Length: 146
Image (cartoon, rainbow, N blue to C red; front, side, top):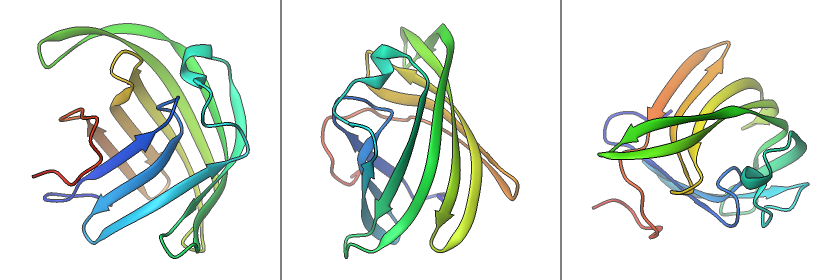
């Protein structure tokens, strides 16, 4: 889990729905994703339901997470973010698989800005926890925050 003084940074290719790398600040680690669907397709622009498998690997190549995922879209809304008015796409993602050798099953509600190509709000619900986070900065660099 992330907490005070910790952050998560993700990098995507065509679609912000499918990150290809995730950097976690503390302890520092980089994980890479692979999918049964093409992450170079802009699935957000298509807004069609998705059903696929995903793997997240540690830097040493070991599998951290393996899961079946579904994504559905439920419309758009206008929001204010950092003084700007933006359209955001509402989506839901389910995950069912294993992470670090333990079973996982959760549901994620996300608001994604196609214009900024990032999630502005995310809420992850799991039987054991609830995580909510919002974007505090959007950058094209994939470096630790100074």
